[in-house]
Amino acid sequence: MNTLKFNDMDVVQVNEVTWMIPAVRNMRVPGKVYASRKMMEQIIKEDESLKQVINVATLPGIQKYSLAMPDIHWGYGFPIGGVAATDVDEGVISPGGVGYDINCGVRMVRTNLTHGELKPQLEKLVQSLFDHVPTGVGSHGAIAKLSKKEMNRVLEKGARWCVENGYGSENDLECTEENGCLTMADPEQVSNRARERGDTQLGTLGSGNHFLELQVVEEIFDTETAEALGLFPGQIVMMIHCGSRGLGHQVCDDYLKVLSHATQKYGIRLPDPQLACAPIRSPEGQRYLGAMAAAANFAWANRQVIMHQAKQSFLKTLGISERDLGFSLIYDVCHNIAKVETHDVDGAPKKVCVHRKGATRAFPPGHPLTPAKYRSVGQPVLIPGDMGRYSYIAVGQQPAMEESFGSSCHGAGRVKSRHKAKKEARGRDLLEEMRRMGVVVRARGMRTVAEEMPAAYKDVSQVVEVMHKAGISKKVAKMVPVGVIKG
Amino acid sequence: MYKIISHTADIGLELEAPDLVSLFKEAAKGWKALVFEDAEIYPQEKKAVTLAAASPEELLVNWLSELNYYLTVHYWVYAETVELRVESNSETWRLQANIRGEPFDEDRHYIYFDIKAVTFHQLKIERRDGKMKVRIFFDI
Image (cartoon, rainbow over all chains, first blue to last red):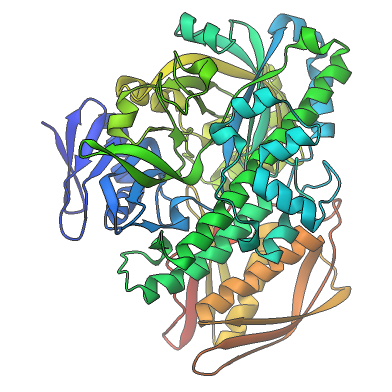
């Protein structure tokens, strides 16, 4: 058995892709990290994210393990790539376990088009998408500003509000995690400032690592599952990555303060103040859950409106019928969330609050929350890479329920700071470089392109491979980008 | 004095000043440099800011969050601090400031970093070597 050292702690390899940090001192449960040996050596060398796995293991009511996915890196409080399930009666909820961008997530849409068919119109379509989907900091105006009453409906209903207002179909809801709505949402708990930050931002992409991509299905690893998901080689698909915009950021900001006072009030001792938390059953915990769920609903509505705007671009630019376009949602997952779910703990089903911060739900075939149309293959897991290389679609597998509270990885993770990436990009024509790689890029500013250039990210294929080998999520297909819009 | 600190996945400011008021002024200058780099921002319009918090650290977070709020919600860009006062009693810290800036102009004000939030990570205002010092990180 291989053992590595992190500070004075043992990190014990239990199989090719799984490592345990035994529970010592004030840890209530062990840490468990999915990574190859090479990755683990890098994680230990790179940052303090393992310390954060250890810190999370001290949270009251945490069950089984403090988990981390192979795309783990340092975050505020919890590591990015961290998963923790807490007992709903005895445990705590922590905004640091969700992150600032509540329900940041990924949506993937299929089409009937092939790359060959789209190629002559690609530039035009990317430009049209850029014109129809507002991008960049403070981007706004995709739809009219929402009144307070209408905003409440969005916060309560999530993606269903969009379907009721002509921005989607029932199929979209069936193919969205939680059907695009957390019913525990309580709009009353969302501050006026959070509302102000969100009331013009529905249907906007924002900036940073968020994107809308046109991709080509380059490689299929599992033909049967790919067919069940409606995928074929050479097919054009669309991926959207974004979240709850300013509204979600403000909800997190507001409740970090509320919960930091609650931490003191309930006498909870924490190794890092950014783990601020409150008992789930406490008034503060319930208020955060209600506000967080409302922000999550806003994010689902946001991705739903973006998808609708994008569909209009496709139809207008290509001049084809809806039937020929075959534009339909494969799935929408969130990767920054806390949700009450039922999982087996010590051989019995138990209600737990699963925090997934930079981790994706990965429910297996046969699970009642896996949509009926995918119940024989498992819930789709969407894993975006960087804009020059590739992204993946996988499906959840049974070991995820036993090992990781039904969770898998969420992306690539940065390898270079934004400053360093920008410095390296000076004097280079990145748009031309991307074009030579076969990718048409439209961005609000060149600096975003620089900080998001492929070399700034780890290779996502290694992350996906670890989860595949662990039996948590099975690779189905790899997609390469051909068109990108960014903030 | 402010210095931008950049790690793999996060970014922040290292601040140093002779007193708390100057530290808050440096923080705003640092915020502007981080978000807009060296863009020209004209001090055409005045705004009064009043904030309260339970600690000087929370007040600093609120101060920079306020500048961010003007930018992302009101499309108004901070240029300079004209006047700033910080007061405290045993329970509350208060800030009053007059600041100047102008409406956001897409041609001149390229936003270099989109700050989602100002964080409390390792946030501790300290007096060392006769100076007030702090490191503050942003979620971007």
